[in-house]
Amino acid sequence: MAVGRSWSYAVAILASLAVVSCAQTDDPCKAKSRVVADDKYCDKYWECENGQAVQYDCPNGLVFAGKHRGVTEGCDYPWRSNYCEYPKVQINPPIGTEHCDWLYGIFGHETSCTRYWTCWNGTATEQLCIGGLLYNENAHSCDWPENVDGCQKHPLCNEDPNGNVPLGKSCNRYWQCQGGYPRLQRCPAMLVFDRRSLRCVVPPTDECEIPTTTLSPQEEEENSRPGQQQKRPEYPDGQPGRQRARN
Image (cartoon, rainbow, N blue to C red; front, top):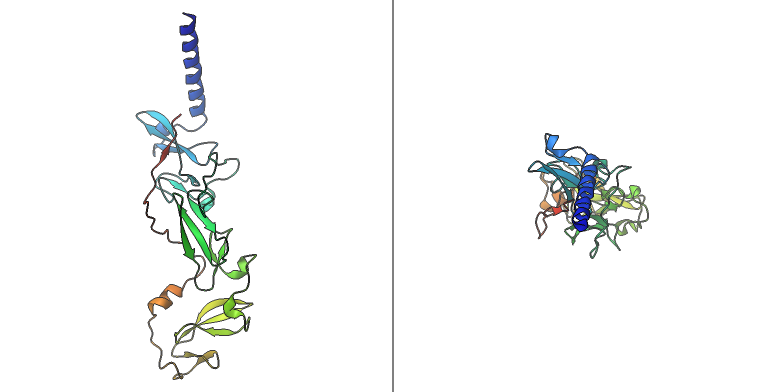
């Protein structure tokens, strides 16, 4: 008899704790979206299921961004749009794999300033900054070199830190070195880049006739500028499923 009363008392205590835990955040069953953020932890959220509030975890390294937002299942990178601001914190510890501090995220390369890693479910994919840009650890994207601390000058500009350098076989595009860092430039209309004088001149030159008005696929790829949103690469594992952590 005493054992039965003790067990009933324990169940009552657990039930009251569950009610208190749920009371600390908005009731998702009263929300129009049926999903709400946890009030303490960025990487947790609540969803209404069968009239009950159920807690979920975002994939490791991501935080709750709102229903139909983020890179997957309403979760996004913590640094994007300030989804994880003080006093909220991430409660789940990082799960690291090769090149990845968390299972999901964007991380700097160990040995290169022009490369970085995108991690999706623990699988790292190497990415390359083009157009003379370097990876900015703070912005989590490719950026102008002067905004990136700790990287060496680009080898393209070794001979002249403020000179011009030919771009492959292109007739109207070239590298312009500024303080040791290259920036992609285009000659004005109807001019071509002269590899001898290293400036834009009236054609023809030894290598180029009248320039075309269209870009080659290589030039289109290299015509990249900071501030553009990064495209999320395709990943072999596809979209991750939600990690459920019922309370």
